[in-house]
Length: 221
Image 1 (cartoon, helix red, strand yellow):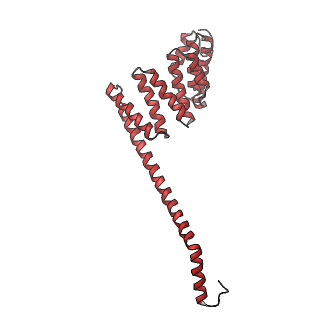
Image 2: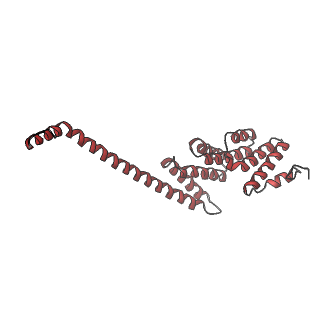
Image 3: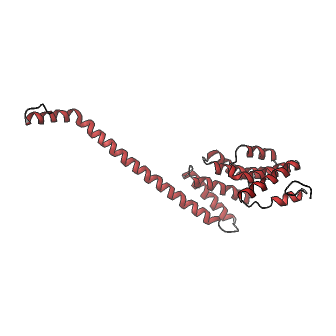
């Protein structure tokens, strides 16, 4: 452009450049603007989804807050769980709602549905702690259903160290159900040791040891 000698030549060169490059320039600006608008729209959608999930989950919590749930309240709560998991399936709220659903199914004495809810958490959640919590609860159900071997396998599948004391307790429950009282006592003592080291209250385990005639150190009482 610096070599052009007249103003007319400069104008003509600008026209030619615009003719050759103007469309792509406009398109680039439009794409960039669409990208910004699209990102903002996506962010707004995500925020709205999170707010909706939070509101529905809070409603679920309020619904089950009573100490005694009647059949109608349980049915309504379980329908709300379906709504949360269908509409917000990848969120933490969906994981927590499924854990609640398992508890509600136990209250209704439908263990198969409780197991299904916990298995759904294990399959769908990307959160290790939540998956571990679901495995613990599933293992407890399996022990109660007389399938202690399955419970041990469930625990071995992965429970995080933050839940190690509870894992040891349930392992002891499974061993006891299998008649392996020596292994049960060892697992329960491990549970107490882990709970004490981490400052976590663990109720009822000492009573289980007492019922085996063992103290915390494994000595016959």
